[in-house]
Length: 289
Ligand SMILES: CC/C=C\C/C=C\C/C=C\C=C\CC(=O)SCCNC(=O)CCNC(=O)[C@H](O)C(C)(C)COP(=O)(O)OP(=O)(O)OC[C@H]1O[C@@H](n2cnc3c(N)ncnc32)[C@H](O)[C@@H]1OP(=O)(O)O
Image 1 (tube, rainbow, N blue to C red):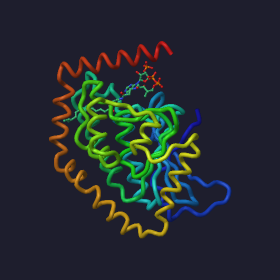
Image 2 (cartoon, protein in one colour):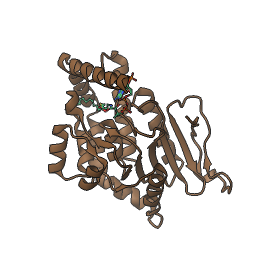
Image 3 (spheres, rainbow, N blue to C red):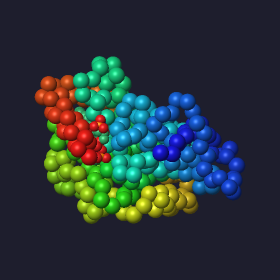
Image 4 (cartoon, protein in one colour):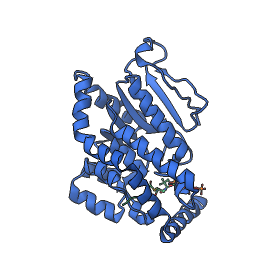
């Protein structure tokens, strides 16, 4: 696998135009699971999730993601694309090992980091796009629906499958999903724990476009971001905020309550048992392959 390095605090405005290399990527010792590059020419940042084998979202990855999102905004990038270094998984969602038989303080930090990352992404002032180059169950779908645009490669799956694991998708997971698919489709799919194939997701509007390669997916995201080139960024950001402020304020005001509900739910013996069985099933399947 390529070694992907990470850039932090690169002021886009200070990056000179270069003809040979068009992306800037510096390393910081603290970034383990993400690569963050800014294209010198377009000013678009790409955040690549890089936690093999399946980019499951643990505390450290969520924290890195949030830092990258903040950097992209602080440095006035023209837009942000999220993608994965894997050929088959965008992200497998939350790291189940963070929630199965968890340590008290760590699991609290984990959920708090998820809330923070989501608020940063959902409320980002700059255009955001997901190049979904692999499966995107649960937390993967959450990240995709927090973006403004989604393009997906064929023959993968996406959706909120929490009920199949015996857990419940919180209200803010559902509200972002509801932004992109009709209510009836959302209710049925989320209660069933349905994972849509790429074609199905496109049909219901869960993804905007389908392309065959990661390069095409990135290009589509770039096109989406470029579609705002004649729009005042300040006016755009305030307009976007009008659409999203309700969910952001709701979670901000209820962060502690949301955390307590999460802890109460996952610590139930029946939920721990269901998660254990699900994890065992994943491990058995993985050994067979
Ligand atoms: C009112 C309500 C209020 C509050 C809410 C309360 C609670 C909400 C709580 C939680 C919400 C959770 C959302 C989530 O995101 S849960 C995670 C859901 N994810 C999944 O179901 C995906 C599971 N994974 C897969 O289906 C597959 O791995 C795959 C399709 C993504 C990729 O398949 P592959 O064949 O490529 O890879 P595998 O062989 O299956 O896996 C390799 C390796 O990785 C381990 N693994 C996979 N997924 C996870 C995961 N999510 N977490 C941890 N580990 C994972 C898998 O076990 C294998 O491990 P080994 O190599 O065997 O060790």
